[in-house]
Image (cartoon, rainbow, N blue to C red):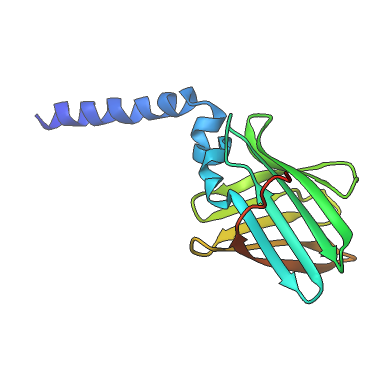
Length: 169
């Protein structure tokens, strides 16, 4: 009986590598292949720092992707803006940013779950890392970080959920 149990256990262990190999990269990576995991940052967010107002707006996931945009305005003057795609790039979840008319940059996901999203592209000038952290239902902490001239720099964005603006009539 002991020999039969050992044989079953050995057969089970030998089957594990083939089952893992049969998974696609997106499946093996879990939720890293689909933006639905990040539905928690859908909606509108705002950060106020004196005369500077930064707004970020994210469409809910659909078709495995999210679209976002942001703008920073100081005294009614547009300072920065950005369009963002979060979805599959080469079979992996990625954050593709197109800031203020610059060429786009792609940051593959390292972590994507119901409270944290980390995207990183070590070869990018700045930032090299983009992070979103859920802080309850009405608060979102985002930051960008990376090295500039050999020194680590981090820029924090502590957003509050706000109603999304309505269409002009």
